[in-house]
Image 1 (cartoon, helix red, strand yellow):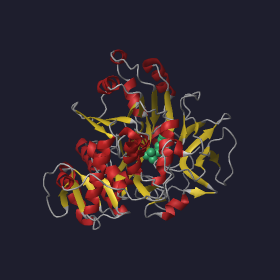
Image 2 (cartoon, rainbow, N blue to C red):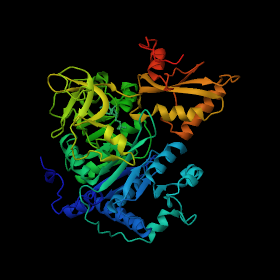
Image 3 (spheres, rainbow, N blue to C red):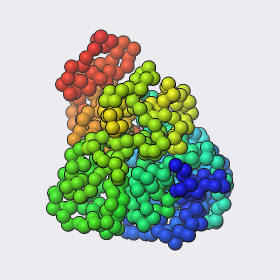
Length: 545
Ligand code: AMP
């Protein structure tokens, strides 16, 4: 299957920014709506592919004029807003390594990522500036902070984006960008150590566009809505790159979840393909059925879900209430594009993630490298070499290499394959917590808890949750003489929210005398989990008690 069917790259131009904008104009789509922007208060704006081309080019010129060079690292730290999309594509046109950050990241989370990546620039807004200024002196590589909402430059290194854009041309000739050129950088959490930056290359667009066409089934006349934030790989791979490389009209909505507003949007804008997440669908399931009866979703052709396991009940609900199948899709930051999926034309087995996409080889592999027989639970692995495979953990080659064994990429998930080739997700093989589709590192939360006076030890686990799939549960041991009370609990919650992120804020705290550790001092999260669930903790012979 060649990608030329989806996006032409005969001249060797693989630049994602170029393919999503100029190529679409050259195809005659300059006047077609690329983005229908709907703000939090219902305000609306339409941007054509011609607008996308001009605005991203203007941004590329800004970066060039500031002296950014190909390979420099640039981050976007903004909530959903049109500037996110223009700057993302413009930075890629300039061949910068372009990272996106969740706008609710706290200063520790920001520091870890900006420092690790040696970021040279960041685009943000005035209300987030304080967080950045608090860590500014620990970031010697950070040369420029650009503000989307400042009319004038604030300092020699804190600049007004509108002012810079005003001085820049909207024509930019994107240099020829070979497929292997680094492109997008997304940080992902592990269960130990700092977050790791999964680095992608421009080649990824080949699989992102193919899966947008073959899995999401996007067609030229579609109105497509991906609810994912750009801080997450789904938000860039399928909220920007895949659909725009195919010249598809996207709706982008700048507000948080609201059942009635979401349904109104689906109806009013005639959304035909909708890509969302299980937690959102489970939240919708909790609404009164009368709510849905108010809306006519006749135009909606397909609904897709990603990020967490899609419970069979959600699929049954989708059939009953939406009158549609909901297709589960599985992928990771590291894979860059959908790998295993249900899709139109494939019979859904509720509870299964579906089958690998064409050209992707998956298997359940034993620790010794042998492929497991059908129905045996084990490590979910992929054969390396797909077009959107990450090329490194930035500045962390050792950890990258450890992910590949016996000729397979180990995803860190456990699953089983049935005799018809369908994959069934079982869990993660590490302690990373998946809460509402966001991976949270227990290590990051544990470290931040220890910063609060009065906390002597901490241990963090994910526990099953009906809505979020997993919730963050924190165990703390307090220093002598410190009493547990609601003020301390609130302090800890706020601290995690400010330092790490709101997603990582524990839903529940438990106070213990000691946190179980093994003889080498490693927190035994397995024991904490068993204790929380009232189960037998199994072998505790290595426990340091
Ligand atoms: P991220 O790298 O943040 O996109 O998270 C990737 C991880 O989310 C995967 O390794 C899985 O653990 C989980 N995940 C993503 N999609 C699914 C899915 N459809 N079913 C179950 N787990 C999923």
